[in-house]
Length: 451
Ligand code: GDP
Image (cartoon, rainbow, N blue to C red; front, side, top):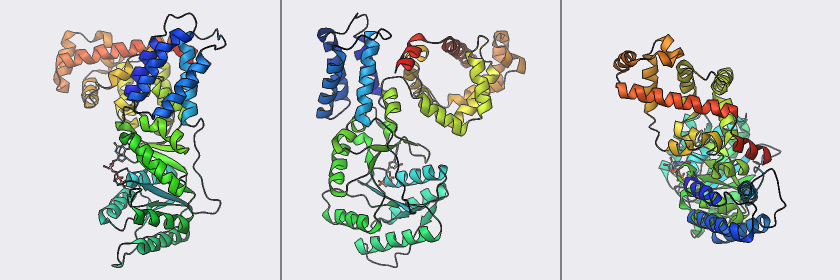
């Protein structure tokens, strides 16, 4: 997510290093680079233009902030402007005062509506709600079947309904929708998620059908599900749908595969509608509310510690994590035993790559995001096997692991001495990195404290 843009922006900021103050001339080069970075990320042209104008106006003639260097000042301005572009505050999900809250899922075929319906249901369940799912895609039996599988996997209520051999068409769609709402009320479900057939804005019949569904259900949320990987096409479709149905928000899916970020950065400005959630993978929990400030932190290479913390709070054993953090950041550092425990914990958070990408790439963690791309996830298992083959003493003190011990460990774990060596090297590096993070990366603190 945003990898390309993030790299290029970092480079643009570097061009300002060593400047005493910001002037029209010396910021010109940085602004040009920022502009190119945004255009290459497929951000809408008008959006880029407005953004650059705002940044220039604020950066030149900026009141002197002694706490920040010129580079940091520009980063701060870019950060503020990007957050403003994405909508400043996290958009809230609207609930009905009288349940059930109805959510209409709209979008093109393949954009991720069914997957997202399931993710949204899982998210609501986590928040203590009782969602019901219904698919009114009477045109594709496979689509209804897919939602059934999704509902089962997250143990959510599903209204299947009986098509009774009726011809696929708007009348049947309306009947199913009405029945589902009644069923939700009877069974005490407080939210109804209506997964609809994929449609193009030029398909008049299907657009009419959506209009009728809207009139019938009077939904609190009409969400447009947009595939982020389709860039400006997603933005245009969202705009068309908004003109017809007055959307209440957008869900950007497949953000995990979108290295550019053009749709995410343009869709709010173009449609005026907020992105409410993002999809980051195929699994039901690869779904997050869209927080503009956190996303911008990720774009600027500052990581997304808040989301990482929330994930950790949800999935990890708090006490164990705190103990590990304390040890890791202290002068003594963490042992291989702690490392193995932590690996087992981390596995619960998702892939190592996705975690590394949430860490800031400035300050003590510099370079870690780039390293993420080279991570081979199967190494997790190998690393654990190697540590398992060590004695308790060795795990407590890596320095005693001599050549002959390494050979024994390699044999025991079915790996090679080189692999054992490599693990020990990486462990030592990591230990050092955490220790220095404990001492405090100055830039990191300065940035965090001043933003
Ligand atoms: P629909 O036709 O709009 O209902 O789309 P689906 O829900 O069937 O999704 C189409 C494809 O996109 C499926 O293979 C999903 O697994 C995949 N998909 C959906 N959301 C995401 C996402 O956030 N990330 C990734 N990588 N794949 C996704």
